[in-house]
Image (tube, rainbow, N blue to C red; front, side, top):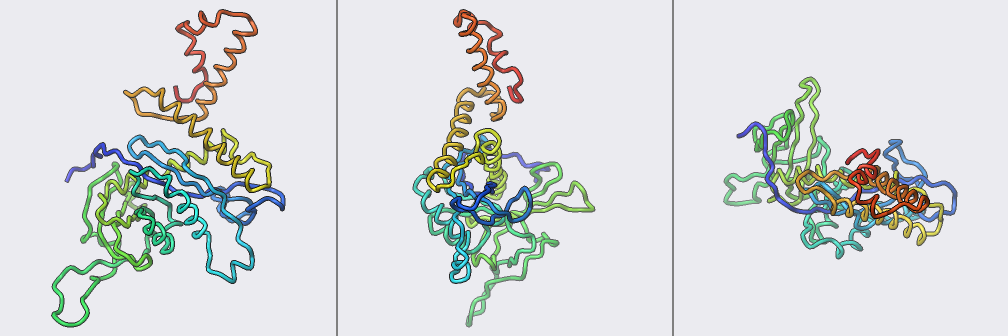
Length: 335
């Protein structure tokens, strides 16, 4: 077994889902309710957006496919029915399922989505789930030994103890201090067989860091599972860029339709900027996208256009000058 795993260049896309908090004041805005705000680490009054994005795992680049506002739960409905936020996210997924590329087989979410209702709903839509489990998740080894000739067959072979990895497949290291282990086990909470990948970071031996990833596709290659979960963070960059640069949180409308138009327009602008930058990339170097650099370049180009027209300069002569592009790239974080 090599000391460090080398990933094969396998091209595939995944779908990623996540929700983000949008601060909003007032009392008459559609969808206003208490939602979890990760920035403050508590529930706050505002709006919430559920986004489904498509991520290219190899290129590590994601595009928003659909964004939908999470509706507020009526006080009576919280007590009278069993409807939860998961039902709203499943409704969003059902409405978006037909728009997903045919190559997408896996839907990746964070630990919040590792629930039975969510997993059953996603699998019913012919998708496989990739997610994250609690490190104290109730897991059992599957029994594959000889069975009794009579009576019920034995299904399990003991509870999974993560302090003893002797029954796990060792996959080597993905980074200098991070090792991977994998096994197919039974999840008591999800009521199904799952492929589990256990990450152990031994950079600080006195305080081990670990994570437990899973997939409902037990045939999925563990390395691909790890890479898919790592690519999930592209959706966080989409939320960040949209909030900082394309005005995702700047809408003052209160109507549901106007809010929906604004959120989709903001994310569409980000998609177009990212795609334009990708088309102009240097194919000999890894693609790195910076929305801050993209806006700076557009501003520089706009200022140069203003100088040319207001000073009656020769536009062709200036744009053919070898230093023109260096002026356009002035102040960029990523050239």
